[in-house]
Image (cartoon, rainbow, N blue to C red; front, side, top):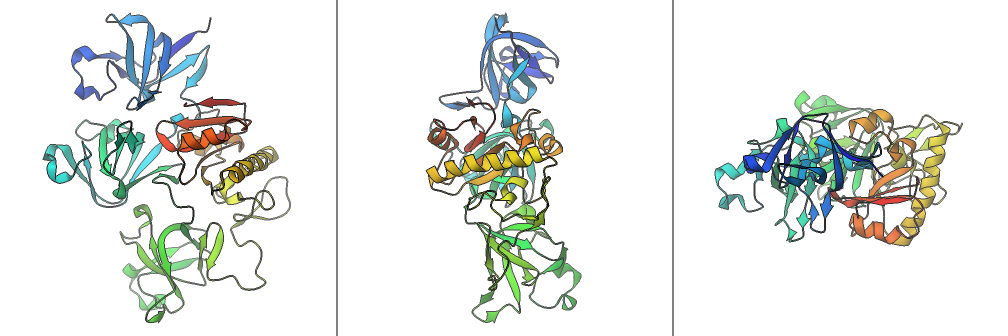
Length: 427
């Protein structure tokens, strides 16, 4: 018979309802020390109505206070079957970051601030970030009135000892592994790539004409997501500069999002193609960042397709050449995965936004990935497709995908695909 246990990894509280401890009576909670191991009959982290507010629901083999079914905060425990961790699996352990993109107010209910009492509101400045346990933009009753609901991961970030709050969706976004997962980025988003050490400027004039507070040094290789760009207005060009507006507050420079850069030192890309300045006749086929791969003597580029004529680039697989694999095996895994992804991409007929592909061990640890993640070997991606939920995209490819297919209650737009053993989870 399979040995099924719950292993408590941090001092925690078992609860009769999946709510914050401060909202429960003493009879509804039970303190448990880290290291406690208890036999279980079954477990669940979601049902037809969604997840359990960041908790695991567990049925124990022996009753606690005469009751066998309890909830526990999912970052405080793990489930093992015969010594093998079955929850969390893959990136269910991953860390998601809430980024505040505008001065805003966190709320205890998804209503206009004007109708809520002061104790249900908390002001937050643009640029703040918070590690999350989970987030959602809807439940079985519908959306949250243009708000996102989130549960803070770390107790030191709890606000008035409460972890679960709401924020206006236009004022925040959620990142995972450095990529935006909510709201999904449009596939045709503009990207500014800095091609030479340069200076961002508040006005399109020579750097010597500007005071220090109107310029900022930027090294070659940096990229920035943009809301918009322009190379001229009604009065003419910007003196050989690109005017651009940064999309995300975390990239703002001195709390300002609109700058200029000399157009010989940067370019604007869209879907891995240069759109400004226009490529000159006879320009090289690829203009992305050059790098080398193990087992190959040639140079590769971030905008170069992994397979000829394919939709997925080496920039997708290597996080824009910041995560270069150290073995030929990992390179070959990337190529094999790209072939399978292309089949899925052709079937769906829409661009795939890659959130996470290859992750070296240090990166995997830093983003909360599990030790056996297929991402470590270049064999897995987490991705989004505009117009699809993670579940609907998984259903579209599941019958033929020869590997892992997973969806996450806390990442509703994301699907995990890998070329490891065939298995599914999250359904």
